[in-house]
Image 1 (tube, one colour):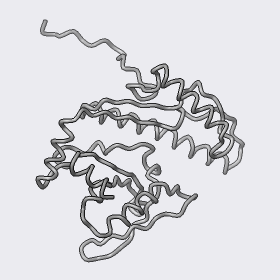
Image 2 (tube, one colour; image 1 turned 180 degrees about the vertical axis):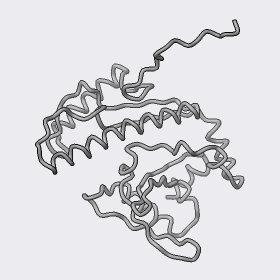
Image 3 (cartoon, rainbow, N blue to C red; image 1 turned 120 degrees about the vertical axis):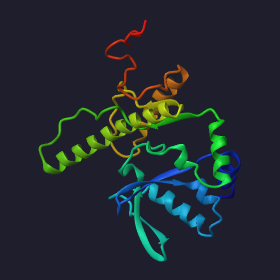
Amino acid sequence: MTAIAREHTDKGRLLCVATTDLDAPVGVLWNIGGIASSGNPDAGELIAKILLASASIPGVFPPVMIDLDVGGEHFQEMHVDGGTVAQVVFYPPSFNAEEMFAGDAASQSLRQSIIGRKRRLYVIRNSRPGADLQTVDRSAIKIAGRAVSTLISTQGIGDLYQLYVIAQRDHIDYNVAAIPASFTEKLREPFDRDYMNKLYQVGRAAMKNGTAWSKYPPGYSPIPLTPARAAAAR
């Protein structure tokens, strides 16, 4: 925890972890570096709970209860995997420099450290664009399951577009990698070794030939429908 705090305060590095507060319900982006450097004696326990909650898939693992004291009152929030509200996360598009770095001299020093650094965003999306083609059994459970998986897949693509907009606004070099549509292997069960080995080889080949990273989210073309208008003043 001391090393995380040092990277945060001395180098301006940000280590953020996302969870979902089911009571609100909203996504929560935790500044782990800020917590580690806070000097709070309970910081280590809180970080451990946040990391556990970030991997607590609803319905598979139990939620994590996080204790809070606000205005002299004690209560608990129920947190689960951040993927419940966002498949990939950077920071909310509503954030701006005035909000993120307002306050004391330490915050201003952190701002200057980040601004003076070349910023690159690398996003790895462990999914193919769109859902796999398959015939769905005509039963309520199968239909519901297929609908949920389709929703999650579509949400993930939407998240990539949101990050692209943020990167364009804040002058961040955007790079995204996803499973290519040409990879048609089916996952037979969780942690299917044969599937993972084949996917690894696809990723390795993409890295070797320089096609692993794209500057645009899946399905996006930078070519506009109509050419830019010539300057009317000419």
